[in-house]
Length: 298
Image 1: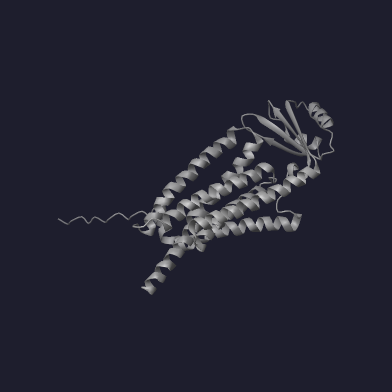
Image 2: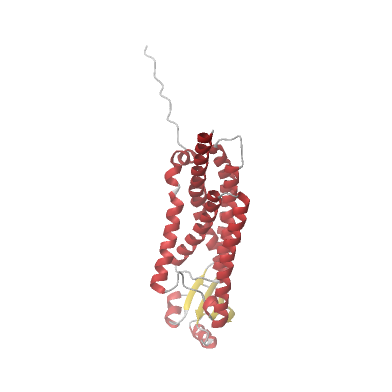
């Protein structure tokens, strides 16, 4: 009788093993996302004079918000109000947003909508051009100050140039990529979008600090073990945040909440590769170089 030869089953390569084998080329994924975001915003700046169109809150204008019981024909409204920016927000309730110049007559606009059979709870907000420009300058200063203070705290915490720079790079990548994607989606730069961008910087730094602390300050473990421990914690944080933000986006029915959560969802999806591939790769390069330098000096 011939003995049956049993061939061992090939070992499947998991996601963590794939990253472990190819972490060097994967380091450039976040850099590609950053270049994509910079390219989109730079293209907008060259062609329109602004990296992203600004909402009425940052330029001055009038916004009419109407809570509707039914979903109207958006094309019909746009043809009736050709000089206004019109958007339909869906959620627990349907909200019609109309943005127009500060000199527009809201009474005439509402009369036109009533003629189309559109009515509901109405809210009107007016912001003058001077106040809008003031808001724009203040938000620019807030974002610049946030990046400066964040960079200062990170450099004090780790006191090493390469790891600290990687944290700042990932935060910048997430913010720039989120704004670029929103621009491609036709969204405008508004106060909620800028607030979401500031929150995104905090979310990004959280996961980067988890990774950097684990890789630099966990003696007694090999680098792959440290990376997996950090990824387990950090990815759990990101997935939980994405689940909460996605629920908030679709259920809230609030325009402001949808804009903030939209920025955070896009930014956190970008944060996963920028943190665990790019920042992780930069830290590994740094640790390898540090180990070789220590071995040569021994």
